[in-house]
Image 1 (cartoon, rainbow, N blue to C red):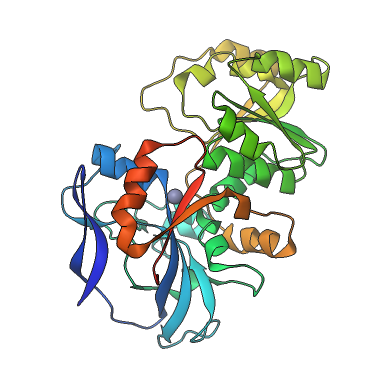
Image 2: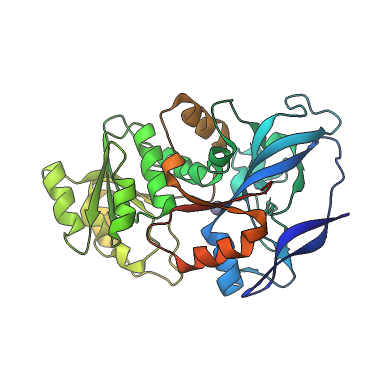
Length: 348
Ligand SMILES: [Zn+2]
């Protein structure tokens, strides 16, 4: 253990930048990373404001942060694909590689997975971290650290687009234009969608998403999403609906947006149970798919960013110094509709 400065969530509503003991031994197959940029995620903020997410409860002080990029400063025995100085980003979730889920290729749903900043596992708002090399990905020269720290949330979009089984030329609908909704829309376009209709109540969020070619913003305080989908698809419906708002209300009439044989992908998580008309689903033979984080998406996400096909830079709203981490979180709690992603630079 080594004493390190870190952003520690002491308990609900109490954040402190202080020293804490963290494991820094670089064992076989591990790499030590000097963190450069860490994104502030909705889940980090939720632990701060609510002290829990579902069954995960903050009972002990926990370091926050899981969307990270940095540079390798030390490599453990047996690591061959990374060397000191490599710029990298990391998957925050580490499964048991021999678990049944991992062997099936679904390591994200391995019940034994540990995930940064999910109690009781510490996150990475601290200068260094030791991590398995197999969950550490090299960034190409033309992908910045700031973009590298966006790979984690974008991987959720990639997982959603993969689960949707998009066919080239599809029309998709994304409900909710928050950071994840917008990244789902970009992944859907990269995955072959001809257009993505994105719906939200907040005009500033729609303005940001609507700057991307192929994204059609719809303000649902001014127009009915079903009317817009019908108008744009000549009453056939969209091929894929991504529910990213987490609002139970979004589930009312969601099937009306889908074409017969279409797919609904569940991304947003309502806190309460949702009443849902199963019969309407059946009549259209709708497929429902869900996502839990992601698996096998980092290399693809990085490749898309390096190719220039996906540009996440416009989604970075503001960058804070590590010393101002608490300020960054309080700003995130404000939930300004003009903020998409706030990031923290560790070396400033
Ligand atoms: Zn996140």
